[in-house]
Length: 108
Length: 279
Image 1: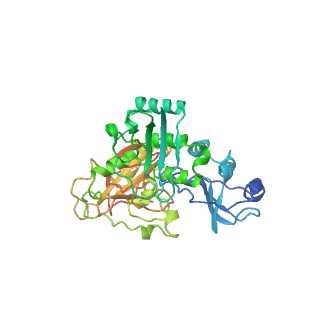
Image 2 (image 1 turned 90 degrees about the vertical axis):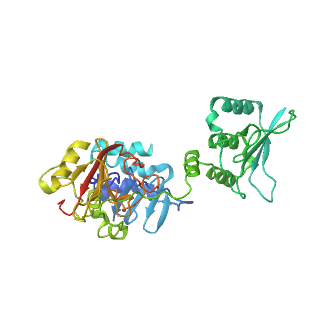
Image 3 (image 1 turned 180 degrees about the vertical axis):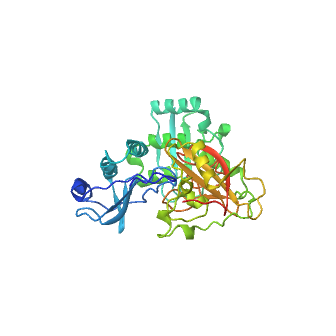
């Protein structure tokens, strides 16, 4: 889910575990974040929220925003926002292009 | 003649200092000539930690600083703003200032706009008077729970109705929003019972509801605020927590003038109340 909107429901899509396997490489060697992680704003793009139970991905619901991954048991670094961009790319063809564009504009 | 810069930061250790190159002196001079607004007055800085830069001409006629350090008026009364501070920090040789020190210095650069605003205000901003007898209390504890927060949006919150349906304007009355602009969203809300009003200054007695405001992220989304009984406004951005601050972290005196992020269009104020039905 792209956490972006306020009135309208956020755009969201589902990947099978096989489709999500490409993301596992980006989370395999996560390192704990140093320093304070950026907080999302109230209005506007607030990152991506992922819920998964696929092998190779952190279980549960977690948020990716601003170079950090907020897991249930800690905050990890998303170097150069690679995971954030890869998650957005996984939405191609699954949500309206304007939502992906709005999110990409926010993290540009 | 050379220009000598000192970073005034330490108490026990000697402060870092260095000499500007000829090109850096020219850049600084050009800075003063092209961006005079970067040099303004400021309040005195804290006594410990970063206190600004001092610049002196060595070998000049006076030996006095030609550009002031932050917070202290010197010859000519010039104070250097954060743009100049950043420039001066960048002129320091790489090994002369540790990264942690540079980070601390940058964190202390003053936001001039905020400083000027704060200098005019002797006490915290008070909320406007709430004229609506039915205005709800600001109660984020109710909205920000796992059973409520994800299922109720800004429209639920503004109307103070937790339907758990992520309510949409007009849906309770057969309207589906397709055009996210002020007029159609306002019309859909009116179908639910909300009433356009010119502002939030008129008295609304018991039974006449409270004030809300509609804003638009053009062609993308809508958002609602509500005025609480304390007079300031609050809101709930989508599935996120209800809050009484804007995107800049400030209390909301008026949604028309607060920081609304990408919701750049202010549509207007409306009144809502117990007669309104949403879904």
